[in-house]
Length: 630
Image 1 (spheres, helix red, strand yellow):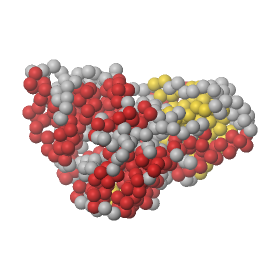
Image 2 (tube, helix red, strand yellow; image 1 turned 30 degrees about the vertical axis):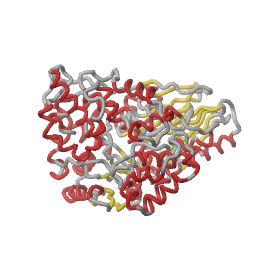
Image 3 (cartoon, helix red, strand yellow; image 1 turned 90 degrees about the vertical axis):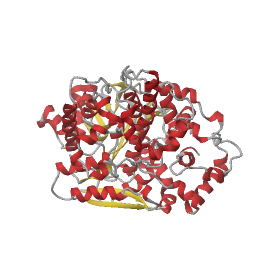
Image 4 (cartoon, rainbow, N blue to C red; image 1 turned 180 degrees about the horizontal axis):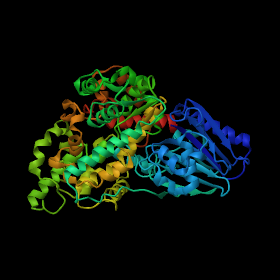
């Protein structure tokens, strides 16, 4: 695990100047690799590769950049290939100089070219320079677990693990207006856009080969296809799920250092930690949880404790307070590169800080909600469509995997989502599925008169939303699959951005066993009526592993992610309100073109619901603007 930075110039350059450019880029991502730094420049200075290393596998000889024996290929790579042992055997043990997975990737590319990507099982962002063909090869893992950004300037192409490493090489700094519209709608950007104009995110599951002077033209090498398997029984799906997830956990535990786990108190992280304990039943196993001491709604540590006690884990709980927010929120935004996915990044930053004080590798539960259907909004949207189908007499046309009567017992899950329900059903009731899900996930309309009307291009964002929602790889019959697929392609990458940045901020590698491509490919074939039977969220996952979780975790219906008591702090007054009031009261904040003129700061601070995210979105954007644009 590490960070990469590199460039291919538009022409030859003094080697000293190229080396200095590498120093500048690497200095911005040093936190990703505190264990070592490596640099390489071509003889003519046109190509430069830099690497900062967090040593996880082959602690002694796995340094980068790494060169092929004949000197033709040079690689820098960020990630972990979990099947590197098997690939090493396939490639031939006698050819290797190190024990690292980096050399496995390099030799796999030498043997199979870009086709090697389909053989890699893991998370990665890869850059390889071919000195013979004078071409750069870039690639990113199937899910975008590991980041990769690029920018094209008059001086050449620059690429890096984080946007901040590219900032010194930008010819201008301004906000991408279309990306800003995405942000106000979803709190993340769609497609390859970033908030920084001219900086692009290299897409997941793609590779590109380019010559000096060219921009990447990514080609897809993998896709998840929702081809439903109606030939097998629920018992078969259950057995296969157990087999695949346990195998994923097993290979995700491969490391030459100690591995622990986040345990939020929910099903996903708790299950992964329990399965890790099955794989490694002996010796200590460290688990990490974070809590706010501002009420039961912000403290889930009792569930984490129940799991730790049952599985003989060493539980470390990070107590997070209001002053921690004031002291660290600017650091959080700096490490995020661009704000994304809600306030959970702040407590995750604090928990990851504690992880970094004990171990280097930790398992995380990202992906479970998108793959197996864990978000309450799926139930909200599906319930409406079931009622519509019952009224119209169309429940038997294939769009409904359960009846509205069977969903009713699970509606208790929505108890804390009454404001969302009120807003969702206030307009457009029983409309088309894409329009209804758009209304459910689109946050732009909830800002009221805070945003300037011209700041949001909802038409362009909606069209891009629809193109993803009705993806060609998803059947039109299942509403459930369409919803989960959209989140899989959009929300999940934003959550993975948070997962990567908050852990790497403290030199910690976070691994996500749910995002193992054999498991994801299998899950896409499970009939929705098995995954979503009776409207129970993550029903198959919970039933398949019922004996591996404490009853309190398995049966809880109040899981809400990682809520932050930000709005409570604002209402009672204190350091957080003073801090945020000063931020928004500044001249620079008031002059942002996306804010309506004449706004009352106090009215903004006082208008937030307990779990509302609009203030968080505006605060994060303002802090980002100050650090990255101004």
